[in-house]
Amino acid sequence: MPELPEVETTRRGIEPHVAGQQVTGIVVRDGRMRWPVPPQLQRELSGQTIHKVERRAKYLLLRADAGTLILHLGMSGNLRILPCDSPPGKHDHVDIVLGNGKCLRLHDPRRFGAVLWTRDDPLRHPLLADLGPEPLEDGFDGACLFERSRGRTAPVKQFLMDNRVVVGVGNIYANEALFLAGIHPARAAGRIGRERYERLAQAIKQVLQEAIAQGGTTLRDFLASDGQPGYFSLYLRVYGRTGEPCPACGRPILQIQQGQRSTYYCGHCQR
Image (cartoon, rainbow, N blue to C red; front, side, top):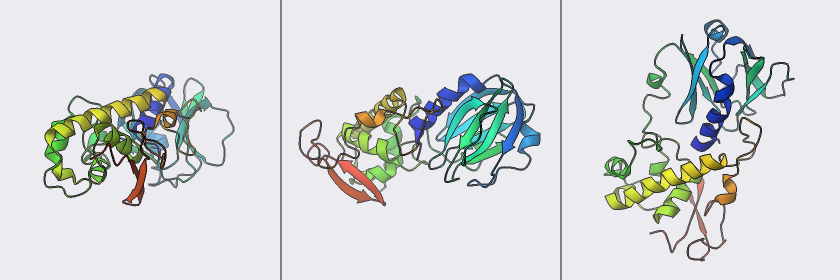
């Protein structure tokens, strides 16, 4: 599933081609997404100018005068900027046709993505209203994690992956951040002190910033907006490296299952 770095990479890739452009039409080939594409989208969005492209958690927000288009890439979706006359593929479900002769095309084989429209403040939309802080913004720090963790008995890795705690720290990045912070992924969130959470918050920022700089993490068929895969997978320290030497101490990386997901860690470096 595209995570925060992949979505931010996509945002940066499409914004120069989309911002300032007028939408001249909408082509919906298959509106059966995670939620149906709104039937009024053609009427509401056509003729509108997209002023900017923002990101909230893993949602992209295309801001226009009359409202906001909310996009989600689902499990395996991607957005591409293409000439309007480019023949669509089997899973190319929606085109946002632009005045510059290009289109923003949503490719989503599993149809778990979303194309939604709101005239109201998108941050108050039911999908976004209860989300936690953005990990790369100034308001996110160790104190934030420490306060939200009090009384929590859940393992810290699951705690980090709760979007009500902090958004965008998916499985890969939770593994990597916990390794950098030296925290065992199974330790109860409520039994970690403020100082260690300060290290963890900084590790989260570092891992996400590294991933964005490298274009995200290649996950099966994820492609950035220019059609190129992300390359952060080449820099993963523990994720997917069971049995390989820990980059810090050389002992083998271990693997366990947590919440139906694989967790990777060093039993010596992480306590």
